[in-house]
Length: 249
Image (cartoon, rainbow, N blue to C red):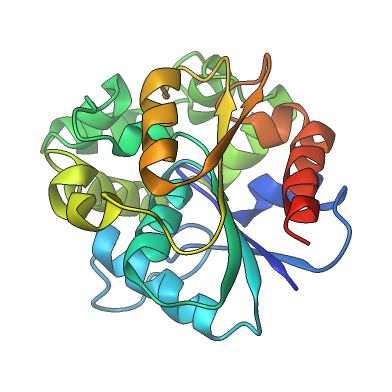
């Protein structure tokens, strides 16, 4: 059965490459429309459109699937496993606290959600010389992305991705829960795992644990790792996932 990985912002499926090298069996990392992949004409890049896109992608894959989501990919996974019928065996996500009812968006998100300010931020970081403190790579490195991966991610950060990020975040006002909470308020389809990187500045351990309990999922700490745990220690991340999948046999 395949493992299917869904990335977040501002990333492509490449974020999973190192981790996937440590896995047994088949796996695939999807590229969201507008993130290293074309953004179809008429695609508004809203959270609901991305969730529906993911549903269609999963239904085209012979299951059962072990589904893994990071960052916004985690939100899309939670939407899929709580509101849609797809060929799943299991699911795993990080930053589950972001999708709690009382979540307050982080500083970057608040800028991106603000008309004109979000566009100005995107233009400034994309125009900044590589290696400068204002550049995309430097911003990513400041949040925990290893230097080489930060440079690679920055090279992928084009105008289409910038626009897609703004559209996605603005579709999630005031919170994800406001639109998706009714379906998130109960056990999800299939066994789930909520990963808790202990050094992730964008998550909250208590809120993450509460969301896991709400969804009937188990939790697993990733000690000392941050938001980009799959880049910081891909071998450890792969081991945690494989242990979870082995437990389901």
